[in-house]
Length: 494
Image (cartoon, rainbow, N blue to C red; front, side, top):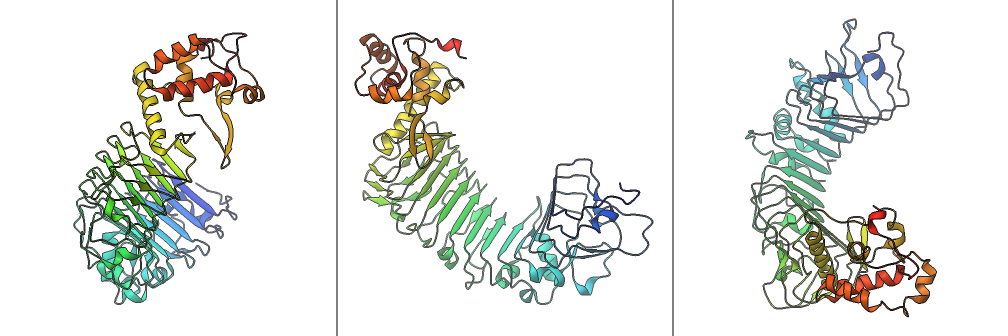
């Protein structure tokens, strides 16, 4: 790779390699010795890599690699990787703080100072690396091996703030509880394919963040652990049917993110408003069976009094956010994003109170709130239905040449806001109503006084049926852009 030894990367700080299918080595020996500033090394999805550094036959003394600036090391999905270097060597990374080694079946990750005579050269010496780490993501088998070779693991993991543990397919490794129970400084955990129970963590640990993935079951009893979690993420748990048991306490929960949990029909009940009193962010995505976020238990007013951000995405069966018939209070809600929820016809069966909400985001567009949140969601639902009737299977959009002229110049929170139903209904009337584009100042002066002619009103009423909302939206659009001087056909602009 570097036969003359002329390559050097003295100023290289980050090296990230992804999906290089035929690559067997990353760097020649002559180059890596000059990488004194390298602080991040990340390699993933490279099926043929056997070593990071290429072995050189002319080297007879085991090389010493000193990556003194390296803070982050990540090896993922490298099935042929056997080591950092193809031969005997030593590797020192005194500044390493973040380490991820996943899906490297042929790599021995750790050795201890007492097991230096192993036939296969491991990646690191436990006593040299673990005490300095703040974040560690490894396979369960590697964690168990590290524990079995170390007399006092508790003295080595005092600085760990995050642990992620993962299990390979068809592996039945025992869960390394000792590692979690010894890490007294833990703030966040990521678990995959494990059973979360009341023996998992030391009760003195105060987790701030917990991520659960591919779990067959989540413990449903009370646990002191839950009281201190600020951020909870649950993903790919298809058998999960009850996210938050009634006996659980989430007094500190600030953000909740649920992704691809297809067994859930609802998330919480109306009686859980108090235990989620600090919740600020809720994101729900890709849950194919979810019909409602909140289900009613009692006919009482309900509130998420600190909720600021709500994201609903790719929920094909969601028909409402809340089934509560009583009033729902969301006084701090300022951001709502709804995408790919084709059955979402209303927000709540009761009246929603969102005094600080100005608009709804769909894709890249912001739709100003029309009336209350229920009315706005219903308007979007009606327009989407009409789009599918006019052109099934295809979403109609405004021609690119016209989009800048269709924006309402309303500055809200530094956003240009789109009029609800504007793009859909303008498509329907472009071929029927003569108009020419006029300046925005003229629109402002004449918007209140201009009236649509009866013929135009009749045409719009025919399209809109009994619904006044789309008619009103198109009427505003036409007032903003129509004039009697000429006509433009839609086909000319496509």
